[in-house]
Image 1 (cartoon, protein in one colour):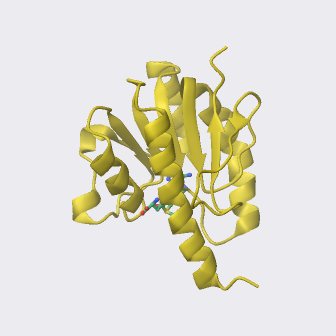
Image 2: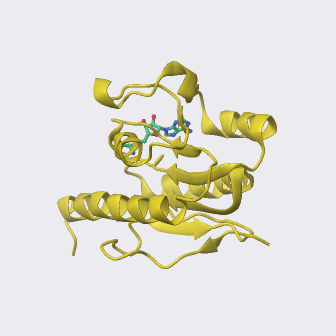
Length: 165
Ligand SMILES: C[S@@+](CC[C@H](N)C(=O)[O-])C[C@H]1O[C@@H](n2cnc3c(N)ncnc32)[C@H](O)[C@@H]1O
């Protein structure tokens, strides 16, 4: 049986593998990257270090990140994602090249219920061909689950693609 330490390490290793894979796969797409859940800012910092030519917009209810990993205020969408995602959809449409979501806490049942709630809010934000990386299984109508890249641990990270047609 996996320990909590095992699970944590698997999640971190999987996040990095899936993010690196998704960044490379969407490199030709000009649309912004949406980071849902800033937390300490580690994954935001990782994305920012590897992507120079795409805007990164961060969604967070309360910023408490490491100073090195804090996005500028004009790139931060403060509030509950259930409220802010529809606003950004209305303003910008289906433009995101990559969406990364790491919104969960320690309660797996709560995480799953929340993933079900926000899946229909996330799905329309992606541009055709765009990728979504999530720490929780999502419940999309049209996005297709993708094979995990080398190094990612099954069930610790999920990758979805929006079809182009
Ligand atoms: C696990 S942390 C993210 C960790 C981050 N990926 C990192 O590498 O440091 C989850 C974050 O999501 C935020 N969050 C959770 N539910 C949210 C919601 N409904 N709306 C906005 N932010 C939310 C929490 O405030 C928390 O900062």
